[in-house]
Length: 213
Length: 213
Image (cartoon, rainbow over all chains, first blue to last red; front, side, top):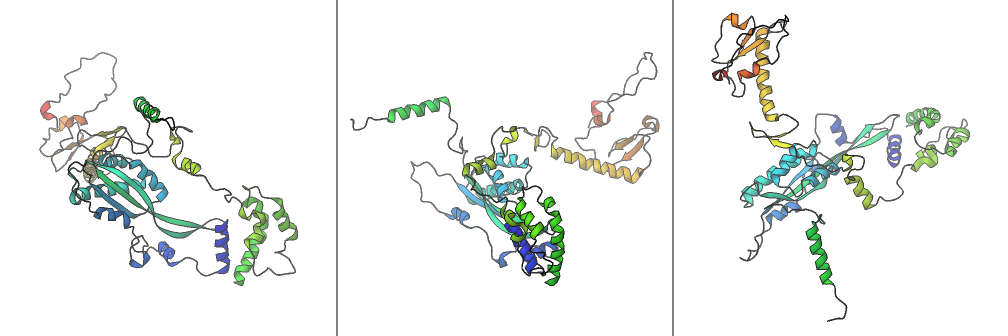
């Protein structure tokens, strides 16, 4: 309703062409407005996630468990809705890279192709720059989506009404870690009867009569 | 500006009649309608149409219909996003599902779904078929099909015309592909017997191992 008010008031107030240069460009095929050449030349890409790659850790003590190698990679401004991309990002969490790539090849989703590409790129970077020995020994420890640039446009409806069209983009972030993936990515996970018994026993043993010895 | 106002006034007069049609889906209160039909301030014959008119005058109390009143809780939002297992069938869960029917092709080593053919192998067959079809078009054009077409590759002997029984021959200027055995072109069906008498069937065409691709 509010949209209707806005657009109709615009119509009445201004007989002149409402369509701004961006949308005009969309209708005319001569100049393509895409996520790369918008925002007056300077990049609107997220940078914080990739800074993790540059972090240098202290040398570890010989008795410490070795810290697994990791690589952070991202793909910006994929022409896909973030809401829809979430399903693919969530699907791939906790899988090995090979398994993820194999499964994504058979998922009939537009974003699946972009995610698969990102994973393969990340795998390559891990081997070349992050001292990963075997490219198959990687699993997806983090996989999430961010909102990218949104271009707005207008479309016609019946009876002279106008609607807003949003050309949404998303960023896809992935962090690969060396090693085998954990049994369960999320908590709480379904426990076996033995595990449940152990938990119960430890709970029972923690009990104390207050102010007793 | 005036032109726009005049146009709108015409449209609005028609709009009066069309209101039940337009807002047919929503339970539209009678009051605004009655106001519009009887009083019709906006369309007074004595006054000209007001310079400023608002959508609120037009639609009245129905202006903010279908607007959310309460914030959706996190539980509701999560349920909408993820779904509920087995509600309304196995498609109750909206998350993507892992496919367990992916196999490795024996011939080419690519992945394929058990339900389908290996896309890599099939692509290879399609390319070869296209070449054969192009050759057939080149040589035989679009003559009516009366006899079978025999495809011969490099180094395959042309036998005497009696053997071919009037079938048309296409010669490909390339060696026979490894995977395309002659055995494939043998017919699996037989024509119906002409007489009911049991005939002593002569020796059938034996395909010797040397003739196999």
